[in-house]
Length: 562
Image (cartoon, rainbow, N blue to C red; front, side, top):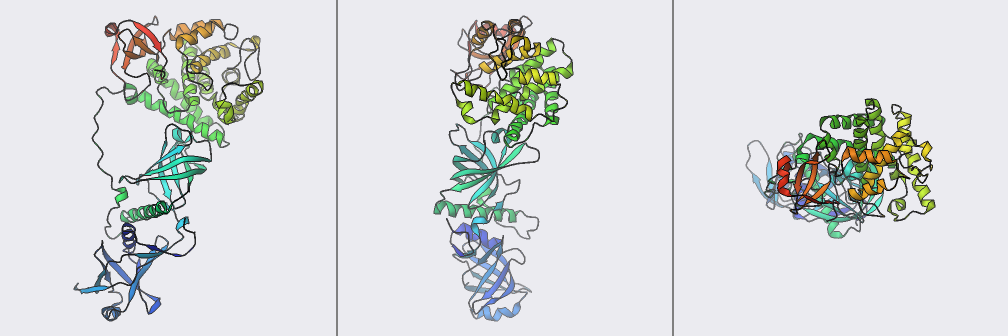
């Protein structure tokens, strides 16, 4: 890597030379220096840069130089381009041009340039319309994080990620690789590490400073070319530019390959319910990040997103109960919080609880597990917890409550039940306080049942996801831990095969349950060819008499297992 000091650098890459020369074409950008008088610059205009052919220089402002140029006195051009001092080699005059009322010469195109710049510290800032995709590959991650390039230098870059991507980065860490993908098709893979995290005012995006590691000579050359091209593209489209510059190949997109549209689109992905549920997930993503960075739960937005969930439930209950199953890519804490909030709200409304109480239940359920993000990583990954680890794990409840001091609108009894007591058990085996049965109220008993149903349906470090029939058997067989009446009520309310379940019919066809009738029987399904939820691969909706063609239900399938 070149040292970060002011030393001349010879640039002989043709594309980079063109970029730098065009930077001298702005008014006041170029000066002419004779070799015999290197300390006396003369203001000139670089009128044209004809790639590989010639430069056109206008000296109308200093016509007295014409004689010296015609005598072939050695001279070169110099000027500042984005803070760097640029200098051509001695130029060879080709001819004087006949332009009315102007004094112009054409010169041979230079084969190299000399640049003096603190290259390692210079950062090229991208405008919002200059979209460069960046892939971050954290160590051990199955999928890359996708963001946008904010700035670029020889030493690193700043990357902006949406909250649902940023939440997968815990803090400064080594990356397996960082990939720059330019619209023109250029791709550069770098070794890198995340150095610092900076939140944006709305907390919907975060910016990550990344340092490049093990930069080779070829990578350094390409990085510097990209830095220059970014600056040239900004100059080309600047309102202050007085002439058209050649578009940068980095930002001239290749034609996208033709794509065929699916025969049947996914109703959830095109519906407003899916988009609005995504807003709730994005809010929880930001709360996870805020907590990791030492912040507190945003009380105002918690209220707003709780209202949003209640509106969705009133608008389309069946659609929302199905939608909570389809949030791939979101952290499990976020998926679980949303699913629990929706089901608890549905149960609470069926029991006739006041709306303000239901809203408080929704809010508490949304954030009830977020304190787990503050626990040591080894506790999340452990397959078996000893007594000491179990006690340490239970600390997530208190850690969260410390960050909810500003949520004054939330009723304390609701928070106590849904956040503090949801993990307690009737036999005193729960956490964090091992509360016995007499200390667990009705709301906490209801919440504990709904919580364990959703938690067992999701994979964990110590076990795979469980089928709904296995979960129900566990509930009914654990009367010493869970309230038997609430277990039975939950099953009756949501059905033996709830909305969102994946079933296999005797015909072999897989389908997602989309609606139940009043007796809890399946009334509508959506066909699928995969046991993995795929918003792009959903099939037709069948209901009522159409279901008979599929035959009887053969089994309930655990999503993602087959």
